[in-house]
Image 1 (spheres, rainbow, N blue to C red):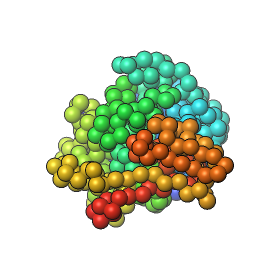
Image 2: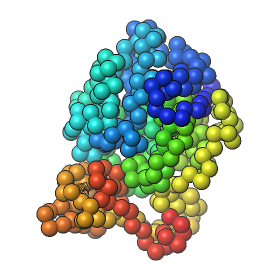
Image 3: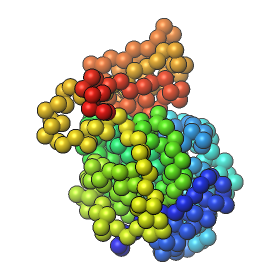
Image 4: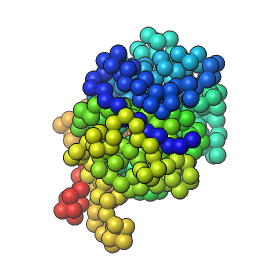
Length: 369
Ligand code: SF4
Ligand code: SF4
């Protein structure tokens, strides 16, 4: 199938407006009947990173999920919804779904919401068992930046199909973006979604995926190709698609099309939808810098997490989620063993009280990271 990405305006999370925008975005791709057949069972995979309310802009907004679910059901297909929240939250998916507004929408729409607590081995990866029960997956990512992968779009959203601590182990084994991208694409390859609908109504820029700044982007993107969708997202924020490591890795494995000249862009054109001055994560200098120069300077470009004890509520989420087990939180304060820290920033991503910030070495600051 030729790669197509549609771009449609949606100004706010009003149920009618979102449904209209999602339907139009999918219609531009040929209509939902091109992607879903009667009596099929379809897994909708939103991005539910942590237990934050919809207005935090961290998770896929429940109204976008509702709109996609309605479209799929119009075709007579059954909908199943699920994700594996980040870090320690995977053990508390029910309360995470509740806080993110996902549970409420599933209840109102009568959708089956599943916890990813059972796994099936796919190519050595513990993938949520439900993936093997369904006929196909529709990915519903959030338009966000990511401190490790620069953006967290359609390909990265599939990483949540892996169950339990597997994701944290990969962060530990692969602290650098290129290595980590290989693990992300390994999971993506297990069940490539047949359709993606990206929630870019309110996007996140800066130090995403949780500690960034909200940005009213007013967009819904849809595509029959997750790699093409990420390529268009990258272009909208002024990046070359192949500078995104997950896009490059997925392209190398022939899992999608990142070349903008081969992608049919429908609805709005790229220039009209462009998000000017979109702030990237501080760490993005690592992917923007030419590789030989990076190799020379790598030891001196450093990023590390710092806990603000005055904001810390001692909830232990960071300590329980840290793949290097290097955080200690006591009543007297916090401590990070920087000898062991792999700078994955899972702690910053998951801290529910924004008590962790990113610090940079002098050279990283001078280079604009
Ligand atoms: S730094 Fe954040 S996640 Fe860690 S204990 Fe404090 S409040 Fe909880
Ligand atoms: S302290 Fe934070 S950045 Fe360092 S390894 Fe642990 S979770 Fe990752």
